[in-house]
Image 1 (spheres, rainbow, N blue to C red):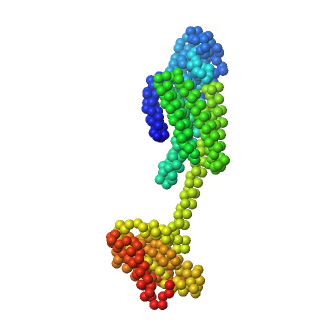
Image 2: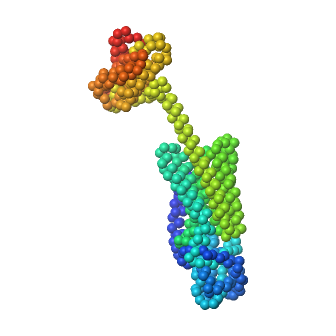
Image 3: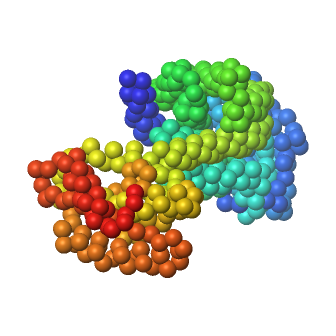
Length: 531
């Protein structure tokens, strides 16, 4: 039921993305894409200008530029709904920002060449957002051919983090796919959710930077994608933590459902009621901090009972994430033009490293536990002296119904009692081990070999005819035993008997009894044989 609800919310989110993207496409780009710095930041060099016909709270400034100035490309960043730029009395740029997200607006344009000096007048109308009042936060004057270097160097942290996230995220997903059938579903989902979260984190930081301005002018689409990815990140992270957690998963499902619902509300607000977007975004920030606090609470509470290395890694990761997220959120609300994403990037890198460490520790523990289980199984079903399957393993096979031609071959060592009495039980054990090795050499690839008890060994064959078994017992087995005896002081000799049936008219118990009787008949026929 919980998974169905989350699935429905997620599908609704996907459906709402399409009209939101269509709305982005209807928002006219400010200008052509940025192509390329000999860069001057003139933000603090501009002079105040009269507002004229513009609102009193608008941003109005002027800047004088000579005609022989080579830097004739202007980039403006801030929080405005409209911006108009004059060169003396002529409008050289005018743009409106209809993006429903109350986030950063950018525009760029070229100053036309002319004679003499130009005075640029910039008039920008404030967005009046609820978290800042920086109408214009940056004005750059540059050579257009060099501007890409300025953008890239100021956002190189995002590029580095994206490459880091891309590599580690894909490795986690590839690892999850490769181990899907080899490990528990819990371990598989752990690496799947971690890989998705890392990829989302890298994608968000890339979208939140200005790097994509070098290749596209669709700032509205970038903004929509950035907010959507940012809101999905905590939902995937919570599912990852739920797989790592040893307690109840119900609270995690509830948190995930609430966050996905908030993302759906964001898309609805984007399409229908943009005025609600700041409140939805604030709710998302509150939920992120609530989720971090809840996970910290669960980790600290579990630390007393399960003080494991993976728990310590998760706890350390969330402590760092909590601190850096808090600093980034404070920076964001004080001034959205500040480099809050730098802080997020550092926190995310530390957090991801801690989560990968915890996941690898979980995988190591799983592999170690499985190895121990395999060792215990081997002890339970393998005879330690001979390496053959033991009586418990034989019993498991013995109760199965007969569905194909089946043969039981019983073996017993001749003269073992004499060897034990004369040379000691150590020599007797070596004789049993030698017999088992010979039987394995003949029948190990074609049948199942067991040590039933003492010096009694059993082979079960399927799909063989009597003449084939006779050839193995009368020719191949004696040759192997003779080769073994050439290196032994105490010769090995065995008696055997077998019984075979081609259908289910005879039970396994009857086959066992017949083979046992025929083996003892051969044993009695050996002159001077002593058990």
